[in-house]
Length: 139
View 1: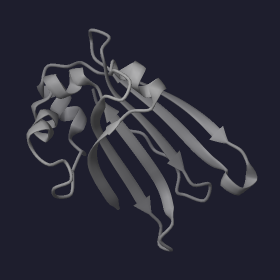
View 2: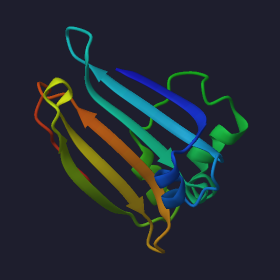
View 3: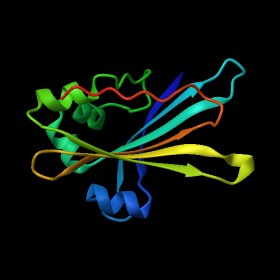
């Protein structure tokens, strides 16, 4: 597994969803799960809104520290959001990218709070030969 955090500008569609100005940087979490042969079985990119960074203290700490320092552990992200008083709605769209040489399953996830604010936008790509996909979310 590889995981990194960085401050980057979001692509135009994601920036609009996240309420960011064009070119405005936001916290970006990249996560790759590698197979036994070293190839990526799953790659995910999560971008966080200004609202999420303001409401969730565990995310806000990355404003004060170098996001590249250490290996980020975002497994408790949704618990952090709940602890901050946010009630979450996750919406996922699943698709298939079909050109034979690069065929993969894709998932686009948007996380909203109880007020309709977008907190996170995540795009995930699964290699065609990767393990089964299992989702579990406890709200």
